[in-house]
Length: 120
Image (tube, rainbow, N blue to C red; front, side, top):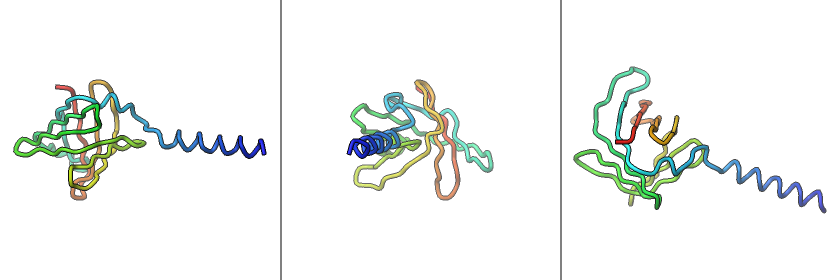
């Protein structure tokens, strides 16, 4: 019976560790602006305004200039998941995250794009 309890507790611990995020979500909090945005395959630069604001209450706002997107977010493993209010959930790969830089890889209409963001 003791062996069973130990095995169960070990499996439970491994499960929780596997579900943990690879990135510290607190580093995401605050505003971010695009420093570089390009299509990965062609290297073509994309010039579109996009300012992210990640709140500590797990809500976000993205300002595209002419329109805004609002919703909730969470980090799971290597991915940032966003769910627009009354919309669908999307996920992007967090390539790197530090206190002053964030690099995301996303698939937009079948094209892989990389976005480098910095604090304003």
